[in-house]
Image 1 (cartoon, rainbow, N blue to C red):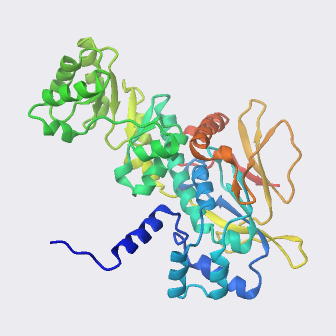
Image 2 (cartoon, rainbow, N blue to C red; image 1 turned 180 degrees about the vertical axis):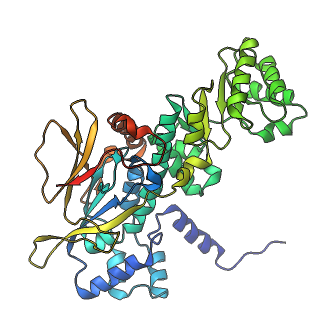
Image 3 (spheres, rainbow, N blue to C red; image 1 turned 90 degrees about the horizontal axis):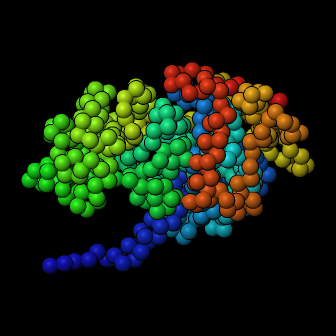
Length: 451
């Protein structure tokens, strides 16, 4: 017997629309209530400049990495209020008729500039500058912060792990430790920060991140013997695969792995135990069996500190899960979205800033540059307020155009934009002084000055 709920087909179609589209209701209510009140007051069309910045670096980090910009540009271009959202807003009396009419035609038509994705940032750095009417710009606050806060937190943690790994490759494998959408964002952010691959297939499809993965302990447990499991995997993937050797006894499994795959075995993975001792013992065993080129990869709740502790061990690569997708203890970058300037009734720009204790902000249009020593190392973040500084040989301007008249700059989008962000992060990191790579809590590696 089967039955159907009334209007099932229509309901499923509506749900599919919500799932496939960028829902404009993934936002905070007060943005729309501000919009509603501004429309009634006649101030909603005032030209404004909003900016995204951090008052401090989360977790006592020495620097931050900008990530999420490419994702955000796509989301802003698609940000619309369909009949589904408008009906809900009307039914729940969130906003009223004039605001509903305005939202029905919403499309961001302003200009966005900011730090290039992959750039290093510090307290006060204007990562994103949104210029448009108050109404157009204010309702993007939650979208911008939810993307940039998470992605930048992941990228900052991942960058520290990359530095700790000292050139050995890392794979991101934390999808099951975060939300399904966050998993894709985290994989992309970690790749920008220097990770070599991800286990997440959607990140591979959407953003061009290389994917990797072979088997879990369940695959070994499925088979009658560990040897049967190894043979099944080698038959399917070839001897260059990575065999998981800690389901039962590591020593016996390593012997078996080389017996099944031969000395050309690609790698073995260790997911438990005292890793420094375990890795050293496995390396000696592999070498004694003639598998001198077989790599060793380790997983098991790694973070930047355990990776650094393994520098002296013969580890060839790392797999990191929970720690990277949760920002290694700092799951948000602490970014805020604040109004910095607006035009008055006469059309002149005026600076505005919050003055509440411990949350003071600096008003005005910002033009940041990074200053360098004669040796080419970053020495200060200088933020010019009001007017840009004339170019010199000792600084690098940090703002790039990201969206013009509501249209995203194409080179920062999609797979190509993700690859560009990865390249830029590597270049920006190379400019930092050595003190930036200390893992202990401390002050930002360079100061921020306003000029």
